[in-house]
Length: 200
Image (tube, rainbow, N blue to C red; front, side, top):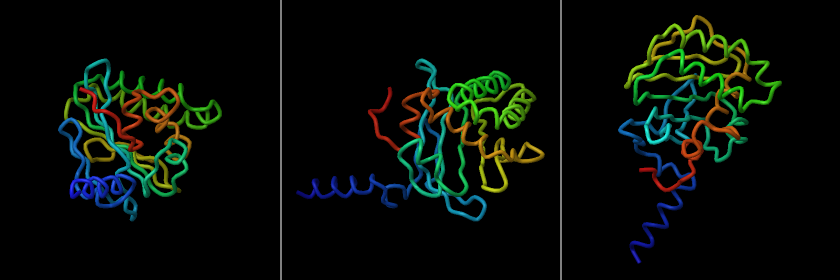
């Protein structure tokens, strides 16, 4: 009976209770804190997972929002600041990563949305192209703040002179992982907080 009660409490927690997220979430030995502060607001970890290419772990990703969201539409419509945080698990050419992100945005964003964020796409590509290589252990975040825009941080430091102002850019960026043709289906589920059998 006691085990049943404990299981029931855990199930309730997984439906959105704070208790379930009181501790850091660890994926591929990378820890994601349950909350963080951005632009004066508290964000919660919506989900985190691993990007696989075949059986190779490429990077981990974590999505932070002001409130939990379980679908792509809810994530994109969520108000307030947002953050997508990536930590590399292997070395990768910066120019290659920039191209992959651009392809992912173009494949998932509606044409009118992609057209509006071309300026941001070019800026992002330039940043990665100027970085010869991202090494295992490097991390970067893209922070979106309404009214300000999107800022790219590499290993915790801002590396863009000015934010990308178009809100469509961050929406298109998130579609890389949450769109109809996501980079990794299991990572999409993980970022949306959908529990699946762990990939081995």
